[in-house]
Image (cartoon, rainbow, N blue to C red):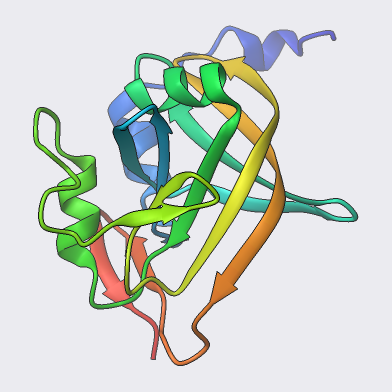
Length: 165
């Protein structure tokens, strides 16, 4: 693929990029997986539907994350769309060096660790992942789902959490 000379020479500062993209509202999700008895998970704000047949979702995970490593080794994971009252859960799963699952009441569904009270959850089988910069675009086929239509979504916008009214 060719580059446009006038554009390729310009570097975008990381902080300027983060600030600009923070203006785009995004749903908040947690991705979980397990290697044996040890559950792993992390907060993400990039979940996208790609196909209905077969049902396919994507998310972006940091290349150095334990969650990505487990997904690559096991091939299975769950995506949880968080509800408006789950800011604490989003913050917990975004933090490093914590027992993210302690006290959450998680259980196994299709062998995957899942969290209670979410807006929706999807059990996924890894289709492929593509490394892009410091992240991997993870594409998975949805094998089962569960939705609570009475819940409202949690949204991340301008570096803060919000609900949709």
